[in-house]
Structure formats: C-alpha cells, structure tokens
Image 1: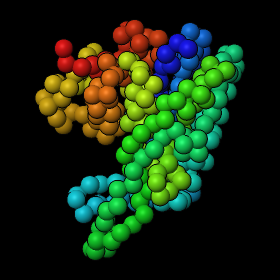
Image 2: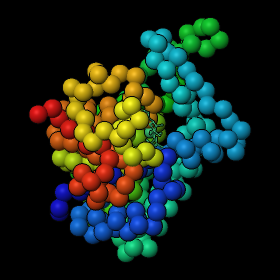
Image 3: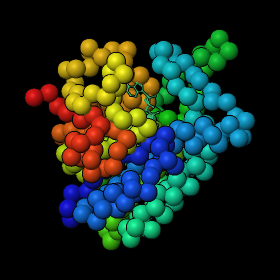
Image 4: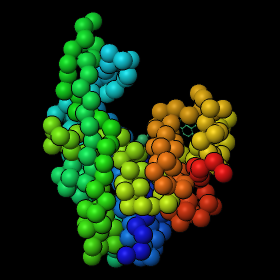
Length: 263
Ligand SMILES: Nc1ncnc2c1ncn2[C@@H]1O[C@H](COP(=O)(O)OP(=O)(O)OP(=O)(O)O)[C@@H](O)[C@H]1O
Ligand SMILES: [Mg+2]
C-alpha cells in the first residue's frame, strides 16, 4: 500500500470547507489512502451552548489548567463526533471515495494515560475523575487494517486507557502520534487560519529553534498544534504543513506554514 497521509481537520473548519476543498481531498485520496482525524472544539462548544452547560475549568495541584472531561462532556463529544465523521464520509462518498468511520476509543486505536492528580475544588485539593490524558501509543497495524479496501479512514481521536474505556485526549497530538505510528514523514493540519501568524503575517517556515523567539505569539490551539508537530519530529516525522488551504497546496508548500526539523 502507498504510504497513507494523515490529515488533521480542525473542528474549527470542518463545517466550512468549500466544495473545491473536498474535490482536492478526493483527488489526493485517489492517489494514496488518507486518514482524516477530526477535531471538535467549535461544534462541541455549540452543543454545550444549546444544552446550557458551561465548561468547567480546573486547576491541578501542580498548577496545570484543564477543562473537566466527565461522562457528560464525553457524551457531548461522542454526539458531535458521530455527526462530524458521517459528514466527512458523505463529502468523500459524493466524490467516489469510500470512507470508513471510526471512534478510535471503540476500535482501540489510540491509547492514553489518565494521570491521577488532585484538583482545586472550592479551596480544597480533591481527587476528581477528569477523563483526559496524554496519548501513549497508537496501534498503527490496526489503523492499516481499517484502511483495507477503502480510500479514507475518518477517525474521532478519543482514546482508551487502562482504567476507562473512553478518555479525551488532544486531537492534534493524537493525529501526530497516528502519523508517526504509520511511519509518515509528512502530515497536514487544516485549521481556520492561513498558518502560523507572527506579527500578523503567516510565516512560511518554522523549526524548533525558532520557537523560543516566538514566546507569547503562539497561544491556544496553534501552540498545541506546533507542540504536537515538534514532539513528532523526535519520532521520525520530517515536517508538517499547517494552514487553511487544499491538502495538495499545503503538501506542495504553496500555502500555509511548514514546520520542520532544524537543518
Ligand atoms: N500565532 C498564531 N497563529 C495562528 N493562529 C493562532 C496563533 N496563536 C493562536 N492562534 C489561534 O489558534 C487557532 C487555531 O487552533 P484551534 O484549536 O482553534 O483550531 P483547530 O485545532 O483547527 O480546531 P479543533 O481544536 O476543533 O480541532 C486560531 O483560530 C487562532 O485563534
Ligand atoms: Mg485545536
């Protein structure tokens, strides 16, 4: 099989991509299998708004901030993700690309570790089941098996852990782990901005040695993405493109920011 291409599709854009974007994705998938890992932040926030639920922010004993993932939040993520997976598969099916859809926690593709820690609740440190943790391992062989006979695999990056059947994990890091588990040299992140912005302009290329100089410019979701890529550089990834453009343009370096190893 030709090496699969892993594409992380931000929940920030998944509902807003043009017909031309999907035509290009289908053309890429005709050449090599693609694995689309989707995010969910914007659609989950919209659903929680409808359900009038505020996200609960937590502070751990070590000063780490996290949004509480409890059973209700996991349920929201699953509800949104089932719809997002089906939408992505439908866009591809209309362009003659067969896509299989999967929740990675159910298929046991992504394994994460929930680190037991205490969190500040009403001025006291308490143990809480915050069902979120870093990715430890991706079963690359199982991903390849699911790609058999289809042109695309659409993955919800929920994970499974030793103690819990389903846990939340960072979608960017999960996508990067998935790419390196497949031995990929390149991957693509499609998001809602044209690339990594520094002083208001899209940077064409970035490597780990540039990062200390960018402190404060990279925040929120973009910082997570760049961190996911730079840690994957240590696992065999050569580079990744980040931007809002057709996959083929991002791969060819015609759009977006390319994050790559220092020469
Ligand atoms: N220097 C920067 N350059 C570009 N975007 C930045 C920068 N710093 C912070 N950001 C923010 O990062 C956001 C992209 O990350 P975000 O997590 O929102 O999207 P996503 O990862 O594509 O979606 P999801 O999290 O749902 O998968 C941008 O919309 C922007 O607000
Ligand atoms: Mg994000």
